[in-house]
Length: 197
Image (cartoon, rainbow, N blue to C red; front, side, top):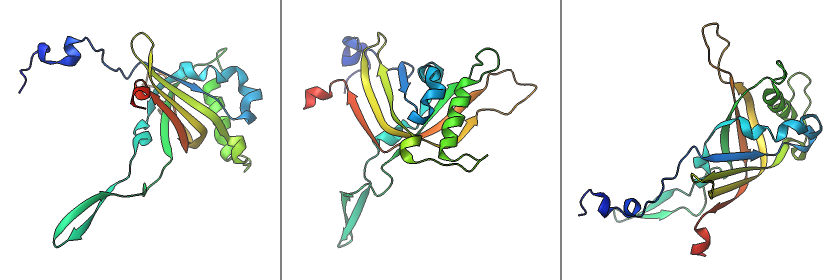
């Protein structure tokens, strides 16, 4: 057994940098139907991202099962996922007021939610009108070299657009917005994957 010393750690001896969870960027498109009204805000969404959660859904695999043979078990992996193959993930956004009153990020996502179902009018639109073409998540090292690249296609906003706190006279923290999205398909690249081909 190796002694607990830096000389016995390949990562330590070779100065391998850790992978950090705070070095990422997420880029967005919005549904074409919203572009005319929110074109100036589409590029600004990226700078308001605080957290991206639920990414474990991209790495689901089929469950195991077993057969019995004379009181013993033979394990195997099921041939199908047996569950959902889509991924739902959540993005939390900071909110700022342009010109003192325009809560532009909140308005954009409320308008997107209203494409799904507008509670004030009952209006609904078809899938090509409520899907964004893509979201793009890039995770990098400390100097900006991307080591994980996740391109999500046909992204839908699902559920509610939720402000993160109640209005409260005793609170001094800024409001945040939490939005849930769903995608059915994606492309993923990790640095080093090409070496395995």
